[in-house]
Length: 167
Image (tube, rainbow, N blue to C red; front, side, top):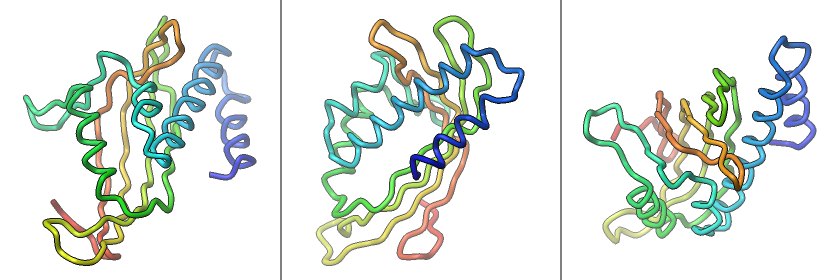
């Protein structure tokens, strides 16, 4: 997202809304961490990427008992990065701050991710993949700043080579 547009979205999200100033500050701080995570993702810097996640991070699944903890999430990211040939666009933006209580913020985000994967199972060639996803995220304020503690995927779309894909 262009910096000027991002600034406009932040200003619009915080003014003239009756939202308390601490919610605007938390949103801006969380958006800065999201920007760090996006940059680390593009650079395939696993340590910098994982530094944006809380030690107790969980990727919540719609299926009971299918949650992914921080260690498994890290392994999944490394696996995915190993087959990504090119990144084109990685965007994620906050659509709302639903609550801010003490050291916990609950927000909603949207994500757009465009990249090229090598084909699976050793097949020759590449696949152009675009995914969108809506998230409900729980963030925790730690001594080192805001950390992503929980993500619930709320739905999105996958396109492979321009065609809808259902896993």
